[in-house]
Amino acid sequence: MKRTPQPYEYIKDLFEINADQDKLFSTFFTPSNGHKSGNYEGEGVRIRYFGHACILIETKNVNILSDPVIGYEFDASLNRFTYDDLPDRLDYVVITHAHQDHVIFETLLQLRHRIRNIIVPRSSGGELIDPSMKLALTTIGFKNVIEIGEMETIDIEDGSITGIPFIGEHADLNIKAVTSLISSRNLNVGIAWASPGSVP
Image (tube, rainbow, N blue to C red; front, side, top):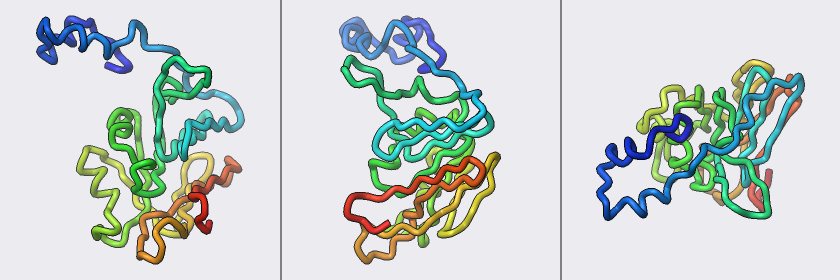
């Protein structure tokens, strides 16, 4: 109902909200669904920075979202992109590694109906130190999770996505699931993520 509103009474009945709970429950709702930027129809590439490692790359043919950390609208002097600024369809969501500031299940579940493909680094088999993101995501209902290894390339419309080796954050542990670069030849866009102090 975030995108398709329903009457408040319907929602109350759905969650079996009684009179004592009604005052608090009503605070979770807004009178309108906010603004919507719509799908990008321009001739070039539009890149929007949502915060942390979350970047949306759009052409009129393809949308790529990295490490979804999506804010919400609230009164502040700093404008920010929110869920309302995402396109209706996300062709590729790229997760660079399994840290909780890069793969946020609460966000991914809200976007699941829009996501066509999720690309994750290939783990070394799902050991405790290197869990399988593909297994985790398919378990919560994602159908098209694609693992990518170091220097592997996936061809997409308007370009490609290539996994680049990433060194850093994990000391000398044999962590494979940190492959982390989007590279799109026709889009002329390459974005690598590295933490401060790491060796890219």
